[in-house]
Length: 250
Image (tube, rainbow, N blue to C red; front, side):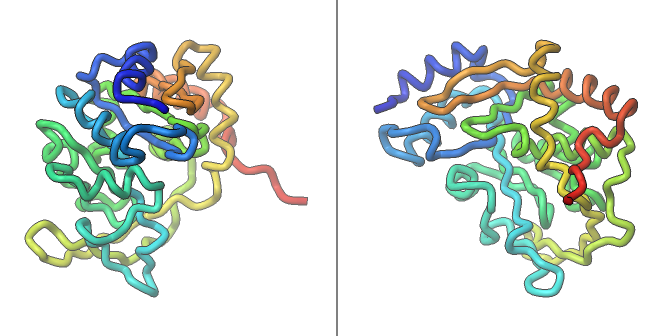
């Protein structure tokens, strides 16, 4: 049975102090038995990063659809990224960015500033969006029991490197803002299934000293520096824009 004390030692051993901005992708099942189960894990993480900024991806592409329900409601629309993000977004003090498909939820003293303005951009990964702020804040990504195929930040890196992955026409979606107003947000989405090939960068990043292996509970995990990852992979993608392109099916 993992405890708050043992999980703290895991994070300290992974190089965390608690003052960082950290984006967590997670598999609760892989963590194993923990006191308090999923809520216990969140209690611990919220406390450990109380002097930093704790961020989870609360993506909603599974439920916000142009022809079914095109409205993103930050307090109601579920996250399709696992139990921890779904429970986290409902917690007191957590602020969720207003993007129909690729929102982030954050907890920390400047969570409102971090999440602000996401609805103003026609692509979720604009450099001035919350995804871009991960770089300016020198954030780290912690992958708990999942591989790089879950690392949504790599879509941003592809876009910033000029890889031609955006749709030619936007999806016509909407967000309900914090005042209850419904705002149109045309979204140019990422075509192709590039995320199914993100794992090819694992060895490259590890060899460059940008990706470090660790454990969290029972989960094999990885820590990645956003700034170094961005610089390294943008250079690689400039040389080979097809780095993450899926192989053709036979």
